[in-house]
Image (tube, rainbow, N blue to C red; front, side, top):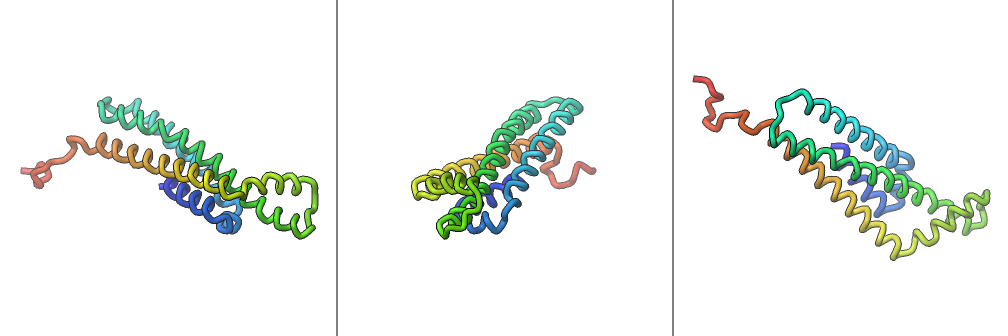
Length: 164
């Protein structure tokens, strides 16, 4: 559930930089926690796969599950990028008012200027949407294949629960 939640927060923060500024460090931390839990879940799934009876459905689930890590890495990297760009906006505003405190803020503003242009923001939002949708679709595929692996042949369609 954390991947879709992170993807949603990611899209909202990318679309509305004011939300990204309000959430501050929460977005990249959420991305990092999501990445760590995806890796941990994948590793525990591989551990479990070695200890249960093999089946084609289980193998498909394991293969599908390993594909989530690249999405989680990309999601984390882009949450950090959205967070950094959200921080650059206030610096740019301070610089415009003549209140830049250091050369580092000037460099951040030099990055923020082109990043705030409409074509760059539209391209960034498209990338954000592709990554968010890709991650959520992959999670859905993993959940579906896991449910099939667990429940296939494990229940009765007669409704009597197999009792006589």
